Amino acid sequence: MNIKQRTIKAPVSVSGSGLHTGEKVTMTFNPAAENHGYKFRRIDIEGMPIIDADVDNVTDTSRGTTISQNGASVSTIEHVLAALVGLEIDNVLIDMDGPETPIMDGSSIQFVEAIRSAGLAEQEADREYYHIPYNIHYSEPDRKVEMVAMPLDDDYRFTCMVDYNSQVLGSQHASISSITEFVDDIASCRTFCFLHELEMLLKHDLIKGGDLNNAIVVVDKDVDQEELDHLAKLFNRKDISVAPQGILNNIELRHQNEPARHKLLDMIGDLALVGVPLRGHIMAARPGHAANVAFAKKIKTLIKKERSRKHFKVYDPNMKPVYDTVQIMDILPHRYPMLMIDKILELTKSHVVGLKNVTMNEGLFMGHFPGAPLFPGVLQIEAMAQTGGILVLNTVPDPQNYITLFLKIENARFKDKVIPGDTIIFHCNLIAPIRRGIAQMKGVGMVGERVVVEAELMAQIVKKTKTDEA
Image (cartoon, rainbow, N blue to C red; front, top):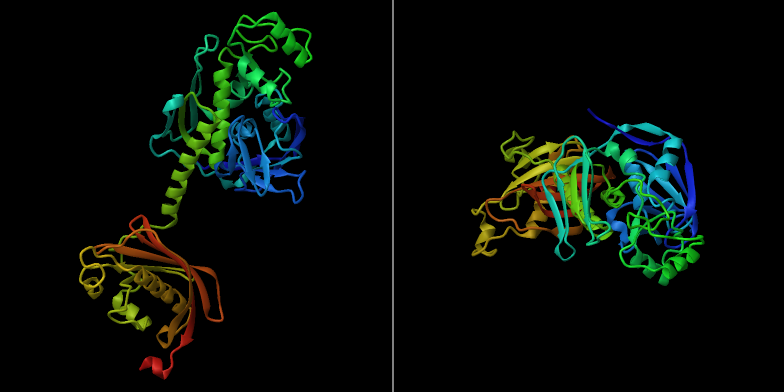
């Protein structure tokens, strides 16, 4: 069953302070069109630059996840993105009048509540999931980080383990068997830090927005009353003590394993930067923002590779052609040894697919690296051009009376070698409508699923003269 994309029905805002900057910020979630994805817009900067929530835009993971694009940055985005993923929202534009999202209570729950109050709207386009095809591993042995994404056809599942060598935290586990459990089981789980980290951050003036209401502070060392009194003064509290669970008594735990649940929340938010909704089971030991982002990049690279393959249909060389070699010679003026195309497999008004069989019998291999024969790149471009010529000549009723003159070749790249025995499939697509007999095309040559050559071509069709016919 196809699932439709979703956005929100109306704009909704939340306000608060950034955890690290301490700056007051108002963040507004706005409805967005289908296939828009998640984007942030810095409305406090001239030109209101937009920053795509994309793993390729990550610029810092030291104290949260920061993305930058178009001269602007947004930091501590993971709790916001986790809320959107947990509510299964696909498209939203997030306006911000500052550089850091508000920390709120250190979890995602207030974002969830705000978004729910705006209401969710189903859209026309189907949601396109990426299904994890096989086990994808990531590890950092020095930090004992292990992550794996495993196939799971019908849901998005998470399992997380944290172990910080702390007598207080010990080893904690958290899991959800479906993303639909996020709101009830994960969204309200707050960030945490150790007391020694808190003191270091305070010393370096790095948590200007912290007020002890938005973090669980784990007491991982002996602490005297003088130090507790000092912390109470810094955070404008009458007193602070250590609770029996080994945390400061600023807040009570919402779950016994709240730290592990929050790490799971962070994972969900950071993996949203892959850019597409996922289907699979994510398991992680000792994850953090840097590892989450590196893992997201690995998944995105695989997606891009697979989409590139899917963009180009893999043709059966034995399929019945649109034109065979004899029919091609009725259209193109080329003859041996310069006829480079053996078949036309597909032909429409905007694209053409041609086939070239590379055989050792071709005379060129007598001189082109006879000990290690390679089909020359320049002839790959010629074969691509002849394929494109069929597309251009298909626009006139009497193609036998015309020839194609190629005017320009740009951005030619040779990505892999072609050897005797290979079959090259050339795809040529119009970049713009043909005007005054001039066509602009993007061509790609593939051997199996390998892209071996690509280029942009410009050609013009002209009527044959008596000299041409001679």
